[in-house]
Image (cartoon, rainbow, N blue to C red; front, top):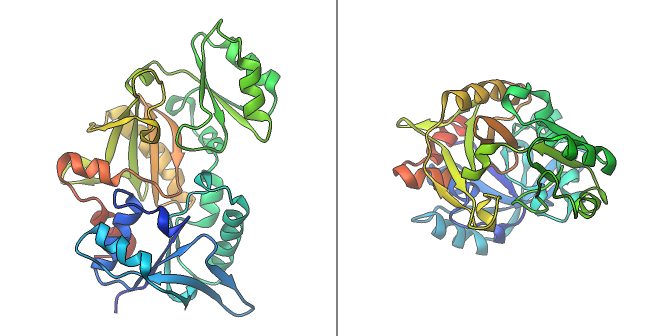
Length: 323
């Protein structure tokens, strides 16, 4: 019997056929792995066991059919100790911060009891903050300031020769991301108030290549994922009248080749991710510099695959679950 696998997600109704998580769920079930899906609050702890409230996955003819069957599957309890756990949650897209923190604490306990978890919960805690980028040399990232002090952030902006990007330390989908140009700071105080009112802000120097958008590169076990010579990478171009390239706010995806400088940056950052137990991650590049590291529910497989008619999900599961 093949090894059972459980996928942990924000919510089952959030899944769509174009999502990387959905492709991985379908592929695991198609291969004959007993596959379940549970939500972020679906793990229970007792004195002698951890149990997960999951829905069993029945592989359909395609990803959409698999998700349709999953939506009506009954919830049943199962021992977590018998499962390989794939964490596909996304705390930044869920207002229940307490639930995600509790899940990480629970997964640390599960890890201590011998459960294999991908990505490692301690690695997720470290690498999920944008502060993680500061571990790496300036050659692979923009000049950066992380602070909750509006005065320090203002001074950083004023010292830049070009624009500054301001965004929350925890965030996703391009929300609350601002570009401030030199001499155009009329609303800077208001922007900094929004970003620091309930947390810490990140300021990054503007990279000229940003006019062409950014590039998402998927790393598997510390290296860019390639299938048949094609990288699992997507260039995301900003919509008309916006500097943000996130697909969620209207950006468009395009096929892209990786430069030698990007490959070198992947090697530097990938080695640290592997050391931290992060086997599957996404790096967002502007030019040759990384501006984001994505370790929760890394996406990109669908768009990267459709450009070259390449299926990346099987290669991911070959590494994580075995062929």
